[in-house]
Image 1 (cartoon, helix red, strand yellow):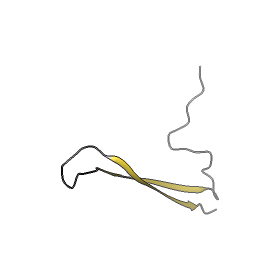
Image 2 (cartoon, rainbow, N blue to C red):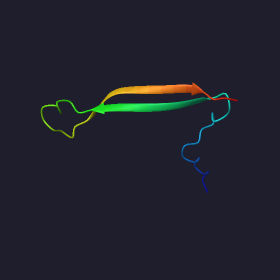
Image 3 (cartoon, helix red, strand yellow):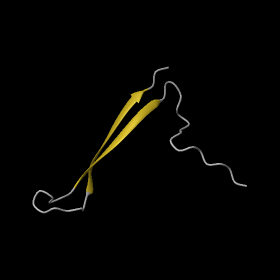
Length: 54
């Protein structure tokens, strides 16, 4: 039998003093102001980090 997969969303760095990170991806549809489209592309990625208390 193989080893069990780690639970989703868990990390080895989840200890006090580590970092919490939130990543936000902003998508836009080029030309959608003139013609409706479903064609989205990644425009910008923003990452927020904060040290954990502990």
